[in-house]
Amino acid sequence: MNKTIAVIKGDGIGPEIVSEALKVLDKVAEKYGHTFTYKEVLAGGCAIDATGMPLPQKTIDTCLESDSVLLGAVGGPKWDHLGGETRPEKALLGIRHELGLYANIRPSKLFDALKNACPLKDEIVGNGLDLVIVRELIGGAYFGKKVIIEKNENGEKAAYDTMIYSVSEIERIARVAFDMARKRRKKVTSVDKANVLESSRLWREVLHRIAKEYPDVEYSDMLVDNTAMQLVRNPGQFDVIVTENMFGDILSDEASMITGSIGMIPSSSLGEGTRGMYEPIHGSAPKYKGLNVINPVATILSGGMLLENIGEQALGELVERAVTEVLREGRVRTKDMGGTSTTSDMGDAIAAKVRELGRS
Ligand code: IPM
Ligand code: MG
Image (cartoon, rainbow, N blue to C red; front, side, top):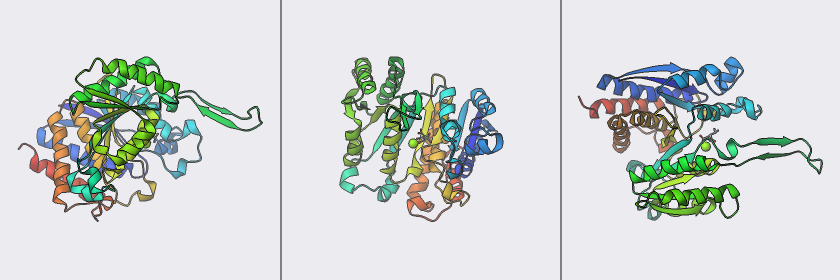
């Protein structure tokens, strides 16, 4: 197999964690005789510094020509003074939009070895925690019309964002969630704010219709505020959560934290074809840049998701098993897991484990 992967290291700790993910992908390639051709491109703050724009056209073109995109993280205080359109985050939103990546898959799973790092009491996570958030990624308030009113009727500055969804945008993300539930514990919770928002009432109406196509999947609705509470009260009740862009952004950070570390959670962003983008759900952690202390597991697991989505299910599982095993052995732990190992120690240990566990 020969695949081209666009690599966006990004800002802050991005380059460090992506290097570890490539180390692991290289080990997989070496072991199984595959070739991954990496094409490194700029996006985010580093792209602003180099080209004046957060998302240069060359980056978009390279991503469109590649089989997959692997991304570290973008943003940092250096660029915080910039306005909405020129901020590093715009690069991320832009790639998602340009590639039509409407489905963001964010699994939260409690690794046995990290049970102690989970901030919830034992009796709460007693049933374990293994859920996936399916977040709509290119609609809602993040992409709807944004307006700044310099002077409103009271002479004050005001601003608004438009949370807008069309039926087809809701249908396609609903199907992703139901299809995924069929491969898991067959349960979908759709999260909205239908007691207040029109866009949520439409969301709920469409979800109910699509649910009828999946009679084998247990379906329920939950309001977003209640969901935020239920995630820390009884997270074991969830299998697949499907929700709109902003709610998914917020809930996925919450869900990641209850696994013990936000440094553990990978994500994939998918559209109609097989080309996806893979990235950790955490940010660029600028204060740790260059210190070699950040946990690279989320990015390494994102590489695993990449393998699964290019048709190499077994290799994706191999990466996950290697991570699980290294955590279980417990010799290598980064700071967020209560250890003292470095970013590269963790990458080395997981790459070595891939070599050990993989077919010889
Ligand atoms: C995420 C991030 C991004 C988002 C930001 C950086 C634009 O928070 O991937 O969750 O809101 O989607
Ligand atoms: Mg976020």
